[in-house]
Image (cartoon, rainbow, N blue to C red; front, side, top):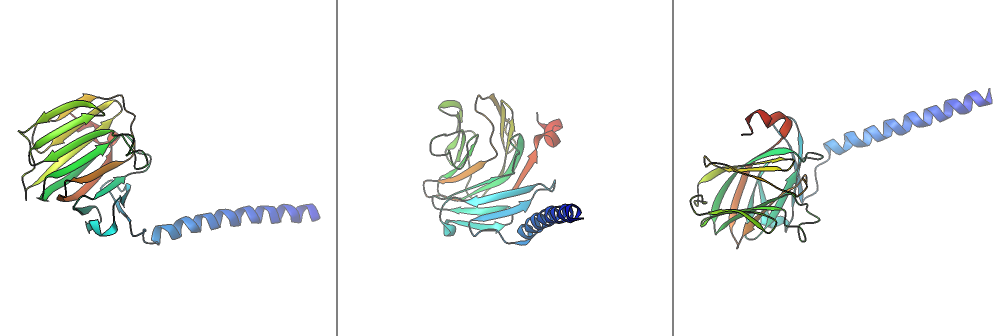
Length: 209
């Protein structure tokens, strides 16, 4: 009888631990994010997370998946455990020079690991894979006040970067994939980033090329 009661108590304790753990997860869903964080669901109901990497006042949220970088500021976003993705964002230069977008690095490693870099400015674009120059042209540039769609596909060793209707830049990289996409305003610029979508590449693959 005592053995039976001990077994029942042990089982009850395990059930309570599971229930409490589940309740904690449910509570987290309803709690607002920290002041430097923001969250949204992509069109595929994928949970996406963003974070302000500079002062709170320097990144102004304009929607659940959009913000304005104010004067040499930065923000990043990601979908957990998704390293093969298509990310789409509308970018508009409001004032200043332009924006820098980085992939294949992380928030923690950004200072030491440049990753893959896209500079989109009013003088043209530059794409670099670490120290290797992939493309540099002044035929594609940010026009102040004009919104442009930027699409980045990270597919294993293959990278594809598209800007508006221009022919996309496709290249091979040896840098490992990461979850993070980082954005930084260049030279005290003011830039709008909106309509951010992160799509697992397995869902976008039929239209990758």
